[in-house]
Image (tube, rainbow, N blue to C red):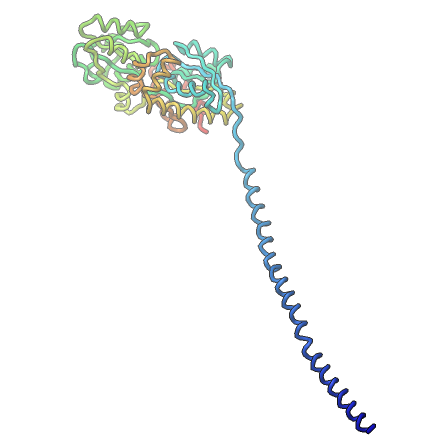
Length: 368
């Protein structure tokens, strides 16, 4: 009996041993689950890669910003102009300046004659003038290069008028005529003398010149005579046509000069060289604003005419009709230089005093 109990106990112990081993073999499976969970939690860490790329992109843009050109400091410019076509292209600029709508600030003085303004320029009381190109050449010679030409701002404004007939169809038809005009010893006389010479005529012998001091005197003379010929500038041509019946434009002297192979120029923009050297960027801005002002005058004559009356004193009704015939331009750079040089050469050949005794050197012309 004792042996039987010992055998039974041994069998039970052996069975317990196998059961424990089986449990121990199944237990490792749960230990794999935490590894899977760990992988699941680690997976998002792979998304960290994009955080590296953005750090390279922002550094590229800021480096380009310092290369932008700084905006020029606004400058106050003191401008001068004449009561006529010479300043008509400037009126929008003056109006915008008064309204605070320009990059620079423009103060202005408008006068009836160039000799009222040129001394102020030489003394430094004005910075820039719109005046006849040959007057600019005279100033250049007088000041030893103290002025520089920025632009041609007005081409020819002279016209030959005839009353009571149509006998003048060409420059040659002026032979034997009496011509009433203003501007003896200035641009009108030189312009007519050259044009006559290109057509085989001499102003001293082939025509009779009756020089008047004011355009109003020419208009009065035309009103008196049944048939007469006159040379007049705009806007006085428009005024005369409104007052004298039977008056017609016989010749456009700008076109006649072009037919002769040359360019008739009335006026340009002249700046003190010292001012230009001190404020080069401001002068560039001025030319941009001035070009826009001339374009406005040509494209919107009715609106510009109102400003002409405000700043120059020519009645808006007259200015509106005159502006299209005033050849208002803004010619700069090499084109300006070529046109002005040719024109001044013509005047020099007629009378060296007309350009100040000598043709200006290349540094007279502003070529940025």
